[in-house]
Amino acid sequence: MSENLTPENDLPIPAARQGKRSSRVIEHYVAPLEETPLAAVDKVDETTAPLSLWADAWKNLRKQPLFIISALLILLVLVVVVFPQLFANVDPTSCTLDNSAEGPRGGHPLGFTLQGCDVYARMIYGTRASLMVGVFTTLGVLIIGGIMGALAGYYGGWVDAILARLGDIFFALPLILGAIVLMQLPAFRDNRSVWTVVLVLVAFGWPQIARITRGAVLENRNADFVTAAKALGLSRFSALVRHVIPNSLAPIIVVASISLGTFIVAEATLSFLGVGLPDTIMSWGNDIAAAQPQVRNNPGVLLWPAVALSITVLSFIMLGDALRDALDPKARKR
Image (cartoon, rainbow, N blue to C red; front, side, top):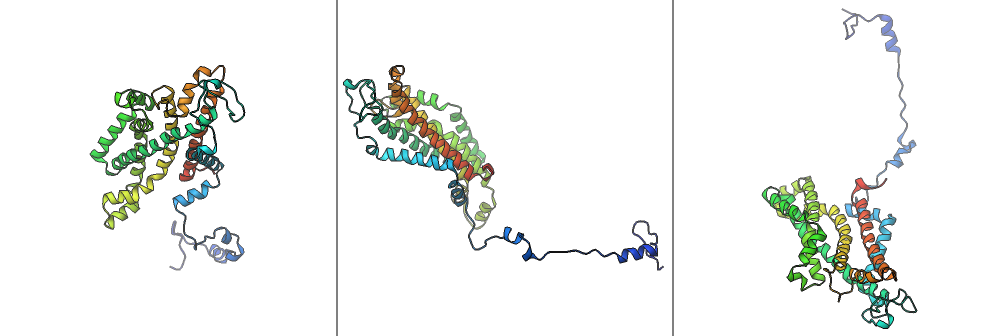
């Protein structure tokens, strides 16, 4: 049978329709690639190596005003800690009652305390103890919390169950309340120092870092690069140290930078309550506590160390926010 059939109902197609279909020609126009602007837009430079997470983060940080301001403030604080004599040429321990509660004058821009000590000099030299507590406490919680969280997240099972429950016990205790109770024990009360306060704050501050580390390790332990490393003969522990932990550092660094400011405030709170650093050590918390009797008559004695404390803590919080935006691409503001 010579008639054409349609696939729908196997009916013959009329000759007129066959002629129309065969005579219809659809023309397509494709522009040459060199005449389109997409060649320049989509061009990728294949000669340069791709940026790593840290290189891309640094490239992003250099453009953030928040990071620049916080980094400059923290750098200033570090210079004050290392070289306080560059900012104050007065001995902060030289106190005479003849200058008690005196106002500002030449060489003493912020006046004197009730004991006749120079407020500005004590504020400058008190930076060292407050920052030391914050820095060493942060290092301590990073070491303890990082190890506990990494082991719990990577190995799982009974290791995760034990370490997670231990962390929950300490996490349930408030930082300041637990530190106050522990500092009342004779072993700590009779030996108060910077290292005593650091030890107490580390004892109650590590669970937060442990939780962050555990979550980051859980996210990366089954990644393809970890599986490939094991397939090449790397042991589980070596894969944890060489691949999992380095790729889990971003959220840990962000939390640690913010926690540093928290520990500085904790030290000031303990010293203000009389259970932190002893009076023989100059710190912002001790200066704020000693300025209480002068709040009404001379509020500047309390105001200036409080301002120094607030600016320092704010700098570390701003740094943490900038690091979060740079290290977490999802959190970046477009």
